[in-house]
Amino acid sequence: MFETFSNEKPVNPNYHIISAREPMGIVAEQYRKLRTNIEYSNLDNPVKIMNLTSSSQGEGKTVTALNLATVYAQGETKTLIIDLDLRRPKIHRAFNISNTKGIVDIVLKAEEVENVIHQSSEFLHVLPAGAKVPFPAEFLMSRKLKTFIQSLRKSYDKIIIDTPPLTAVTDASLVTSFVDGTIMVIASRQTKLDVAESVVKTLKENHANIIGAVMTRVRRKDHRYMNYYYQYD
Image (cartoon, rainbow, N blue to C red):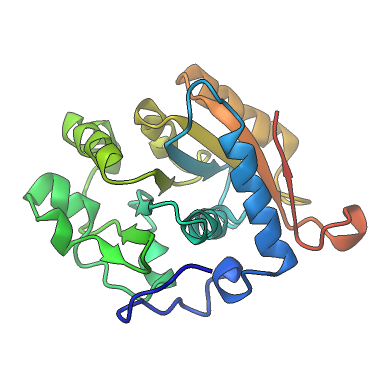
């Protein structure tokens, strides 16, 4: 367990940050295994900044990002989780924080970083999406955003970015240009094989470094683990 500050933000019970609620549970252990797999995915070029995407809504992408960030922080790794799902931001709700200001305001409105990033615990910081932008794709392609993301490398050990599903918009593929690795989230009995293959093809066409996939909602009878199964290529 990590030591938390007195101003720690309570998590929203509607979001399944089970790694925070039950850090010694079997599901939290699977997220720690995911963390280990990421660390060993490329020993020569460690993955410091990663984004998570999926093929469609409701596959557990945001929940996976939240829990992964949590287990990194529990391991005393200074971690930042960023919400770049600009069309449907959700990260702020999980931590019961305001979305009035976020990464958009830092990049476009020169808001001070320390006034926008929220501290959830000693090792976990949260950067919400912030103000709406009329053309999210253009924002994600901007040099200003890339420069800002790269500047965060000096302040954090791990940066986890939540991005939209790829079948809805191309936003996630744009983010791959400034991250070290991309993780696909696939829901058992929900994600269609042809759709997943199309998403992987799109990512590869954008030269994404796909470091692996996370399968969610696997039933107990399908695997000896209760809720989650992780597989890496």
